[in-house]
Amino acid sequence: MIGYKDVIGYKSLQDFTVILAVNIIFFSAQTFLEELIFRGYLIQIVGRIVQSSMLVNFIVSICFGVLHIAFGLQSLLSSFLFSLVVNALVLKEEGLERAYGIHFVNNLLLATFFANISEHIGQNFSTHINWTELLIDVGSLCVLLFASIYLISNKSISWFRSRAR
Image (cartoon, helix red, strand yellow):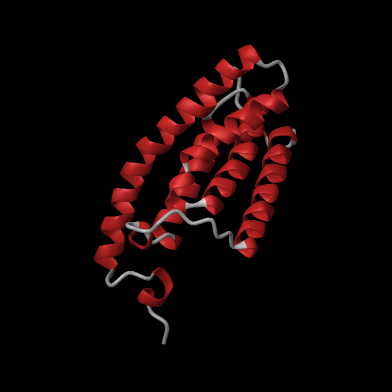
């Protein structure tokens, strides 16, 4: 019989609940600050200097990727690709709301279900790249980008668009 330990990987439901609550609180603040700094502030600053929105997206994505380099080269590449997609949404929508939501859910799921931070503590910088994981990241980011653009532009789904007040 498969129990919750097999599904969520925690010793008890109480451990899972505590970690989930802490992650929600922590990532709410952490994601808000990253979005505010990178997509709220840095996009505007770089956009005043560089006129091409593609180049702005690329420069801000490099900065975002470098911020995540502590977990290794694969983390840098994944974060860079994630940032390219989310920056494109911010530039298209001219708002941070969807970017914040996507980034928050991404961080929450990774930290709660997939990442074991204790594995990274005390390890040296890793240049190893798991190409399968990276390709899955790229594929999921492409799906996310196209689904978001579709939902933004599809006029029949009015509850996804911001409403003028």
